[in-house]
Image (cartoon, rainbow, N blue to C red; front, side, top):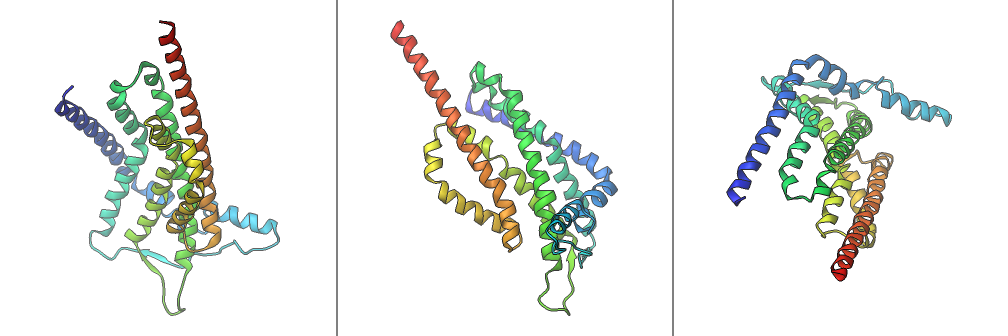
Length: 271
């Protein structure tokens, strides 16, 4: 295929992916009450499951330090189209999250012609693993990062006279950024898999720069969480685990490639 033919295939890949996102986005738009009342606004509820779990943990240690009775702020819309715009963009974001496995399948179909037959057999595994990691990341961001951030930032005051009246777009932006950022961060093993296949990353390189990666993890944790040590540690732990898993994945890929090269060299010698 020529370069223009590849662009044409890519164009239709993007079109089909967009249709999946739009289709699920329309469904999300129709289920407005459920999405906003049971998902978007739930981290503001003191009875949210994360707060109850943290409270139960603190009580086991004989304290109520992590128990909360209220989150003292209200969510408001200060523009005429504020609520409608929030509805539209929330539906699109939901559509992207739900459509993620279908989008990954479309992009796999785009790169599939350039793969070996043995690699093509891994299509289902790739789609399942990448989608699984993405959804786990979304759940981690929603149930851990988002409520911790909402509780801390919503309760923080520089003076008693200043009340927190949070704009709707700011509140939704926090929930969305926390969830999506975690979803993409949890794709690290998939990224390392392909970078290793391309020869751009090796396990030795990842081990060598592990300490720098740890610093980067702490910086990322500080960016996407409130400025308190507990929240940063909670977020940093899964990132470190993902990095270590990625090292083992890279080792496995390199070992497999060496075996394949040794077998090919043996076959050439016999001939």
